[in-house]
Image (cartoon, rainbow, N blue to C red; front, top):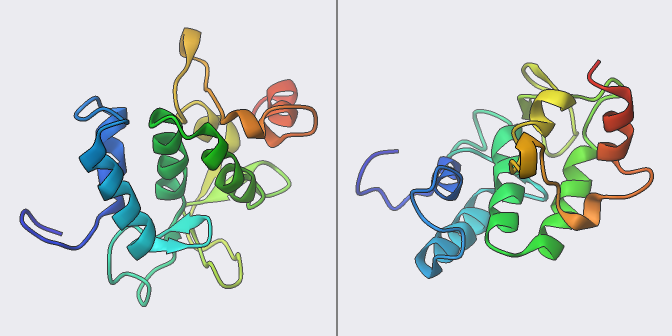
Length: 150
């Protein structure tokens, strides 16, 4: 995409994470909704408008959405996509860089859950903060916390 384009780019979800805008900014909330409306495929997000026919959903973007929902004060809303997204992890706790939303097939590279966990909404002491709905016994976070990265 380019400056002045009306096509959404999921990378805009990083604006709150980098401190460029507050997660609670009203205009940013409109950006989030536009990205969800244009780029969503269930809990997964495409990176760019028009990329559905040439690539899979970009997993990092999907987790950026969860992150921005938490930053904007919507923990409860973030829990559902978090649970759905973590369901895509392999039995080794790995994710693909891209996922085919119709089949769930991994399309590119694998990202260790530990690496992803450490990059989702940094919390106190450098630890990741998952949406409250994803915490608890049997949650993917709890399982991976005790076992470490593969």
